[in-house]
Amino acid sequence: MHGWLILTLCAAWLAHAHLRHRLRDQSRAHHRRSVPSRGSPHP
Figure 1 (spheres, rainbow, N blue to C red):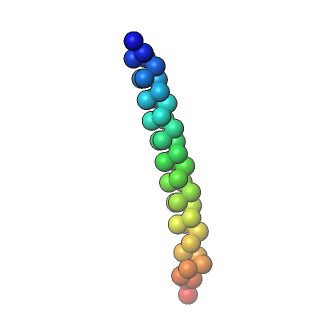
Figure 2 (cartoon, rainbow, N blue to C red):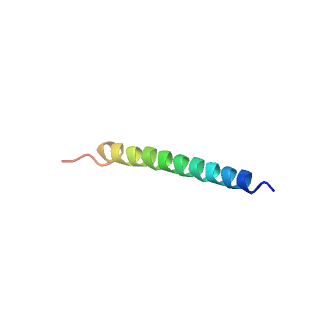
């Protein structure tokens, strides 16, 4: 019976996926914030 092992692996995988998703969102937000200054310059 390795229920605790499965739960631990599932929790670790969820935490890893959440962290990776959050990092990806941060990088995407940073990229989106730095793009408009070059793409469409303000008059």
